[in-house]
Image (cartoon, rainbow, N blue to C red; front, side, top):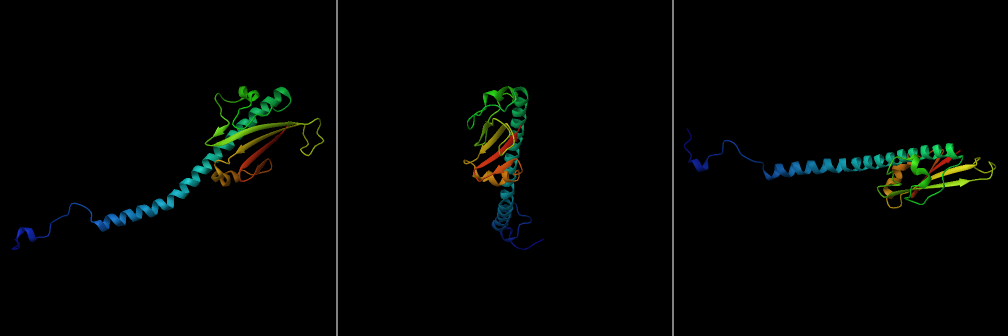
Length: 160
């Protein structure tokens, strides 16, 4: 048995964390979150871009179905507006806007196929992301022979 008074003895076990331990844990959590947040943000932008490209495929399918029925692409409509001629070919309540990016459909009809595009009817789907410029790099991965890119707009070109 110890001869020291009870008040001077070291406690057998402590009940909490020291300030230094808490500071180290906080610092580690801060570093890990600093590394993870940019990756999460990038993944979210890529997911938004993939959703918009899926919308473009759906709109293209609807436009081609309309063209099969009427021999030409549907008439143009402004940004954020579903072309009335496409409404029966798209899912109910389909929107031409997604998280601040507005879509527009434009249709060009030519008298013959003697033009630069070599087609009588041309459909152009434009994504206007001037309100969300951070999506531009994520959209760039979809650039290709029928998709054109700029820092504010993305164009999909459809020929008949």
